[in-house]
Length: 128
Image 1 (cartoon, rainbow, N blue to C red):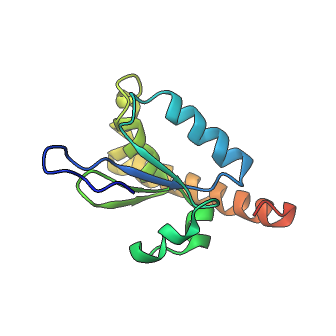
Image 2: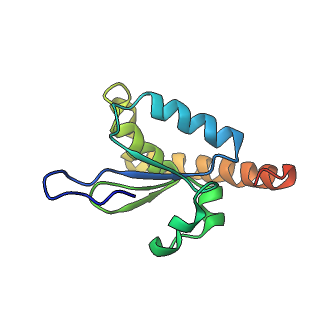
């Protein structure tokens, strides 16, 4: 990770697992829709050592997307996706309703159920 300078605010950092084909495709799609280097993308499959200083466990990030936003808050799962979408001028509109109480709870439930099954599938296929 780069050290932020006093002149530039810290960039959001997204932690993802490229060994999961579904996760990798989703991150590639998000990355293509964001301006320049507005986000730092860290593949925990290639760089698992970055997680220890943050107190994150590799298996947690393998199961669900993690994001540390520009203010330093950790966002996980559907909340992390909403955080990434909010950075895209084209998709920002979709991030707003994902933060409303009803859609946020439903989105978290759907994401967590899907992520749990995807994690199990990846383990059974040896995608580590």
